[in-house]
Length: 255
Ligand SMILES: [Zn+2]
Image (cartoon, rainbow, N blue to C red; front, side):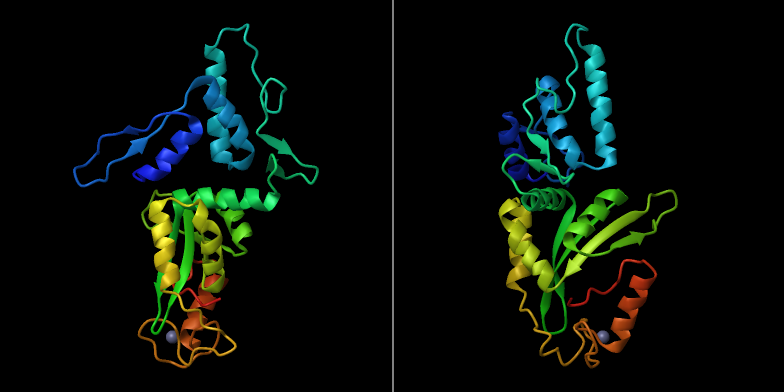
């Protein structure tokens, strides 16, 4: 990543050094890397595998399989949860997975924090008289976005590829008061860049209580009277149509 502090934090967890890589293009930011190999890498892979989506599961299985075939045959392969491996992860009776000493909720929060650190956007959405925070994550991996949407209590939007031959993407997005709450919850987990983005979004946010709805639509430049969710009739209907058709709404309502 180009976020040095994030790579440094991973390197500390791995017990490895941070390496500065070369820019691919002169105008790119400097990328940083940390690497863990062999048995310690396999241990980390086994530990995180239950929390990951199918694409990463498959990568892990291939990586471990190729590593095992290259090893001397007298060394036995270690299966997840076998005694030879100190389990960082245990199955709980409800069928979920928990790290030692952590609640399912804390695990879920850590998972979504990690996802958003890599793939998320913390946005200060602009409206006529106010600013409202938006959290958005967009990826090609449908099941990962479905899980994120479940945790954020929102729907998944399907985005058809703009260019032929590209993969479609999936979006989970929340805005307004709930996004602000999530930002406050997730802030302690995030690196410098996303912490700054959260601070910018939260400091610009003056929550509009819908007990007293805004007099006019929150969409920038729109002066039509409020109808619902902070929007005028036109913008509310546009949002509602996008939703009904399963498209990413072009407008983010207040709640
Ligand atoms: Zn409007």
